[in-house]
Image 1 (cartoon, helix red, strand yellow):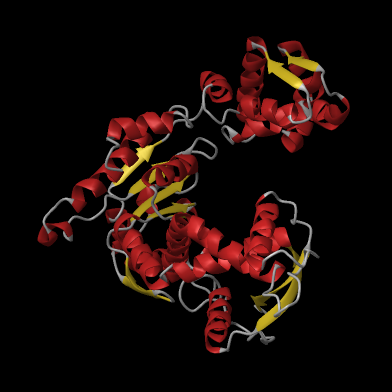
Image 2 (cartoon, helix red, strand yellow):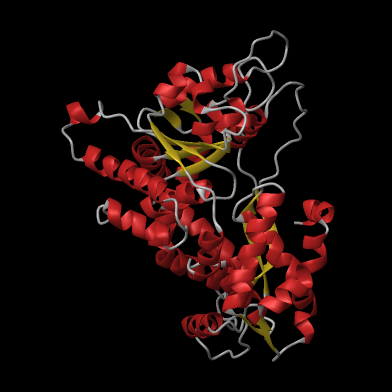
Length: 446
C-alpha cells in the first residue's frame, strides 16, 4: 500500500466498479489512514482508531465488490460475513468471536501461501530427490541398477537418466508407493447443542494430540511429485513465524465486511424467547469497539481492524442501531441506484465486464461472439425497466437477462465451432419480448 495514494486507490477500483465515487473515496481514505498510522510514534499509534464505515444502498450496486477489491489491493486479510447469521449469547448459532477466528485462519493461509511460494523451488528439488529415491532405489552390491537392465550402467548414471525422464514428464503415469499422513480422525459423537466452531476445535485438538499415523498409498508419479513437494514445503516453513505474522496483519490491517447490518437494526418493543436484534448488536459491539479474542492461534486484539458495514435500510434506518454501535461507525456513505447509463458502462468498461466474460466463455467452444452498440443499449434499457417494474436488484439483473437471451447460443455452442454470432438489439428483443410483455412471468424469470 506504500505506493498507492487515495487517488490511485480510487483509480484501481474504477477498473472494476462503475460510479459510487463517494464510497470509493471513503474507503480509499480509510486505507491510507492505516498507512499513516504505521508511521506515527508508538505512543500515538495505539490511540488512532480506525474510522469504520456504513454503506447504505440497495442490493447489487457494488457495496461488497468495493470492499472485496479494496482488500485485494491492500493485500489485507478480508472476511465477509452476514450480520443476520449471528445470535446473541445463550442461543445456538454462530457466536460473534467466530468473525475474528475466521479472519485469523484466512490470514494464516495467506501468509503460508506467500512463504510456500518463496520456498517452492527448494521444495520441488527436495521432492524430486525423494521421488528419484523411490524410482531408483540404491542397487545392492554387484546387481544391475534398477529399471535399466544394463549391468554396466553406474547407479549415478541411472539416477541422472531417470531425472531427465522425470523432468520431461515421461514417467508421469508410472505408479509409485509413498507414505502420506493419515488424516482420518476417530468418529466423534455430536453433542446436542454444540456449535460448529466447538466441533471444529474439538477435531483440531484431537488431531494435535493423537500421534500422526502414516499410510502407504500407491499413486502416479505426477501426483506423488505434488504431494511430496507440499510435504517438503511444509518442513521448510516455520509455522510459528507464519502465525505471528498472520496475527500482526489481522491486528494492523484486517478488514471485516459486515453485510446485512440493517437486518439487526430494529428496536424490539416486546418480550419473548426469540433472538433479539439488539442483543446481536450488543454482542458485536465489543469486537467493533476493540477487545481481545481468544483463537486457536493465540490472543488477537481487534482495536485496529477496519469494519465496513453495509445494508439496504429499506425498513430500518441507521438511527435504529443502538447508540454505541452508531458511534463506532462514524462514516456514512450513501450509494446511488444504478441508471441505464451506468448499466451501459458496466457492460463495457470494467476489466471483468459481462460482455467480455461471455465472449471469452464461448470462445473456448470456437464461437466468435460479439455485441453491437445497440444491443448493449437494449440490455441496459430492459434491465432498468425490469428493476423498476419488479424488485430493484441493481447490476445483478444483468446476469439474469444475459443468461436468458444467450441460452440458445450457450446450449448449441459445442456444435457451432467457427461460427460468428453477432448480438444486436433485434436479437435481444426477440429473445426477451414474451417475458417482458408478461409482467407476471417476468417477476419469476427476470
